[in-house]
Length: 478
Image (tube, rainbow, N blue to C red; front, side, top):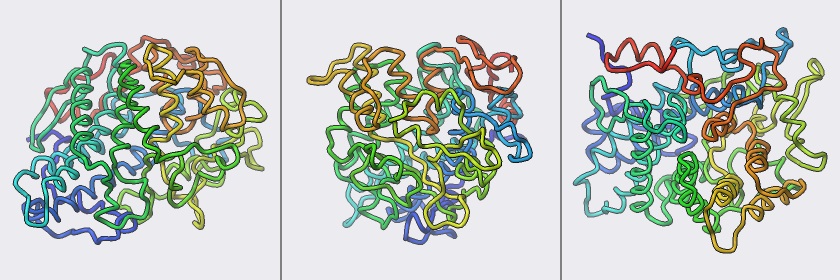
């Protein structure tokens, strides 16, 4: 009998992903699922374990970020095949099939199932030393992690919300049990995400951080109220809910916990072992070889390194966008054996490592909050004392770039320059319903340019899921 591959039922499995460097507490590996979720300590350890799959090379550890850059025209496969390994040709050429599609499906549903296991086992776990607030903090973390998984799934495997909200999204699964769920609409998935995130924001302790209850190596690698608000800002932006996006960007900005990198220090922020306190990074994934999801040489820092696999380099049209004085244009490097190609310096490998096989991956930065708010204000949102121009100036003035006046084009271009190689560009094209015209492209003309609308903006559901789930409907033309 076939079972739906997206549903996982053994709660204790999530504990094997706890990173002993990320969390100094030893993970519990031998408990049964019942014992693991029977008290606060087990639920807390289980929650800590849910962070790990995001580091998979199928997700933020490599392909989710790199696919976006390759598909969106920021990145390319270097032409010197003797110099590179030949990886990542499918997203570059948009040659997706159900057997060769985005690989986050299983990892994301694993996070969803693991989150459900905790969320659905919190009731009645208060003790003389464990308060309702303690449990709510765990629930808020899991609601965020589940929401991020759903958000990444729906914007990959469904047409953009701004284009087809009632089209097929992904299955909403709120209980970890064997089943064959059908796809919910994209609108329903976004509504679930918003519901979960707003609940998480309302129940999490104002100053809560996992660092308060466990020793963590990187305090920017755990969920907080501001991290939840940052995701809400992004989700509302993707929905075209301009005022709400601006409001949540403002909450993060006004928290006072983060400060812009400047032209003097931006270049030194990439490859650090931990995020700089008071800097731009709101939330990042902490990379470590001790994480069971560590992908060795297939991690993003090796794939974008000319001394590694070097399979994903930058395009000339991206680099040509930067003025000579713009420090962001210096975030690229070449190689003596491939002087016509330049690779991003956002994943140089952590300081002190002999191989560039580890690099923290930034998910939310303060600069994005200013860019989100600028776009929202340009589209009609209002924030007292703030204009779209003033938010864009916050970016350009800290990068050595000339000021720009807000327009749909300048905002899109500033996002492309600022957030390059952080996994945004493909999704920015999609939600803006903009076709992609790739300038520096070495493939055939078949998929050089991707018009909008097109069936291609929703990637095919993996064949393994289609085969296992009788209720799963494949995307159009796949």
